[in-house]
Image (cartoon, rainbow, N blue to C red; front, side, top):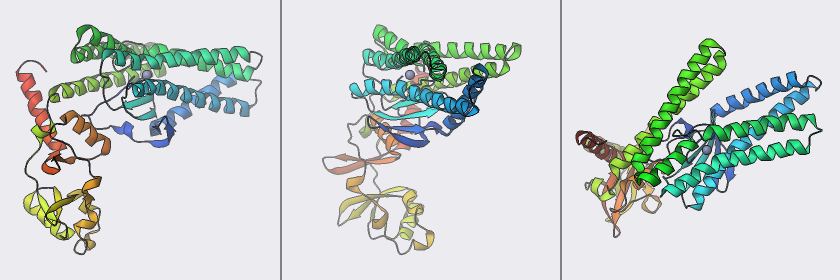
Length: 395
Ligand SMILES: [Zn+2]
């Protein structure tokens, strides 16, 4: 996916929705420059899979030692997560080929999630990025199958590879289900986009299909839970519920993009640029903030802007040091700040704010600060435009 899921989920690829809980986790390394994270929920699923494999191996091969059951469970489980990373990397590599930056890959309870910084430029890219994942899973299924055939006399290898080729095959097939946010939903969106030439319409089609599929899974899961296997049933229903919220979220993001398309930084910025001088103490600065209500200031030195300071930065200094610390020590020097130009699309500004965890940027034109743009300014414009969109009958 492009943001997808190999397990199952895909998520916000895009800017406007702030990063959710999935952006947290333990970083385990980088591949092709892409940081790979383990979400806390991953540890639970890793333990569960290892345990269930151990149980499965114990009943199918009672002659093995307990140590062998455990070791094979752990190795197989680790190879499964390698498979998930491989699936995600395949999306990422195709995205990078189209010069679409990939922010991170996170492994969590449902599998993997690639955070890709923007939507593809055309239907072909969308299609290629999405289909890479299932193809990668099918490729791995084939590899594990062949390894098992090659070592067919070795029970340990065949027990492990058999589970691995089956699970990769299942992953590939599951991801082809044509509901957004699964890979299949993205493939469907790529096709619908190519046919309708309308990205938003295509997203609507893929997201509606995704919701129908999610409801079917919930209904089937509940029915299964009530009539036969309640664990499998609840699990199926839970995945359905997850897909449902992911489909809704993805659609909301596209609605945001649609509302903000054509809006530029210069349209949204405030021209009121509060300034303070660099020799001011933090104590004086906090009083200035209380007096004016502005939480963000340009720091001036000898008549020219030298940095940026915010109330949040002041909070990082213990209170008893406020009177003898100057804001110069605390400000972010101008050459280290992110800034924008009046012509930059607001969506791109929002994306950069999100990627860098900042909420304000100076707007610079020909070397001069001509305004400030904040996350709250963008949200205000967004709310207005979405309301007007509803009034005009097209959301
Ligand atoms: Zn995928």
